[in-house]
Image (tube, rainbow, N blue to C red; front, side, top):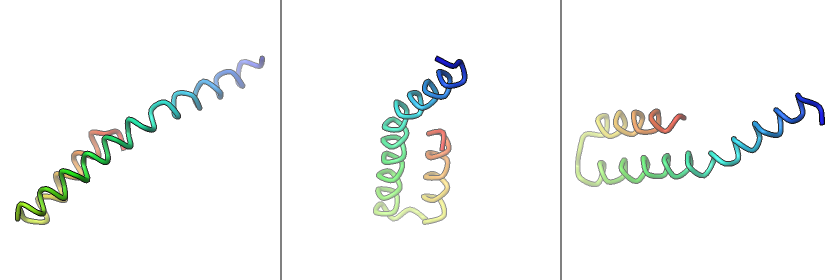
Length: 59
């Protein structure tokens, strides 16, 4: 098999394997954000915390 094709297929596999992990991390950030809002914290603070959380997820 062509070396470039092997590398491409490998990259697709890595991306597919990491997608659920990133989705669960982002979901956790949204859950924490909603809890922050519900607790009556300032919206700006909750948004900043959510953004920092999502950034730490790699997205």
